[in-house]
Length: 354
Ligand SMILES: [Zn+2]
Image (cartoon, rainbow, N blue to C red; front, top):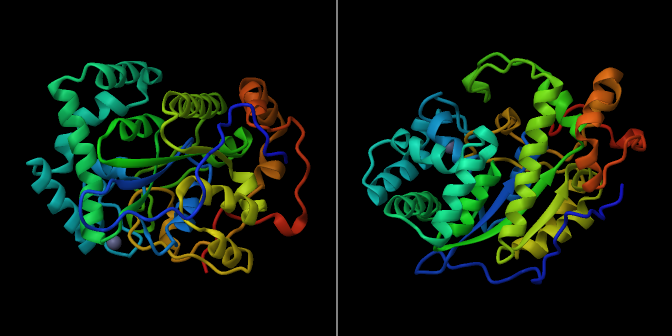
């Protein structure tokens, strides 16, 4: 598939920038993956987190529910509150903010980052925070910065991979002083997302299922896919000062050498050796990833493109998905009748356990 898309904005800085020091006042670099769920973000995050200068911590935006409320397990095997790393991050965040639980930040999080009502009230609050910040805006930004400071201090890393996906959180980060934000807008064929969200899961925190998942109707999945992708594109345009890129799931799994070279340009880190190891069949191993796709609990992630939707999604659902979302999918370079991938490219799952 072509990687030329009309909504893309090219990066401008070269790869392998100096990594911020682990001490002092250098900004903390955050590589933020945004887009719709079920687009391969957890696998991508695991691969990005394999770089020695980074720490990948999963969906930071979800820690307010997934770790403490749902008692989800960290990818190290411990329950979130029992993981030494997350306990250390929590304690330090409480020291920095004066709060005593993640839940106390929930209302502010919703006010600025919820996608309910299409995220329009939240976008308006963020506009105000950018131009005429109130005291509450300042508190929200300080709490946002504090979580990344806590991660950096506890792990000793100044480059943090956050796969929260929510594009409104990306905007929060762009407004937060003291962060050097790099945005990866990850997208996938809408029909792949629809197929993935049709699957049902029972609650199983130990294996990464924090809550029950019922099959999602086609129209809701397409609406969610469209809203998150349009918002992600809008965030990139609203914040040209943050280096960013559009990345398609189908491209990074099929052409990892080429696509990870693009990722290197945006992140300032050399991902060439990691791409070569992935192509050679070597896995990456998530360390302390909380929240996100249950593949994080499988111990190892391999490069294995998933095109199951092509065979398994009923034709009527393919047609409805394209009728509702094809106009936007075309903007990202997708075709109504994509070429069938080579047999060796077709995997059974997005990321396989070793
Ligand atoms: Zn852990």
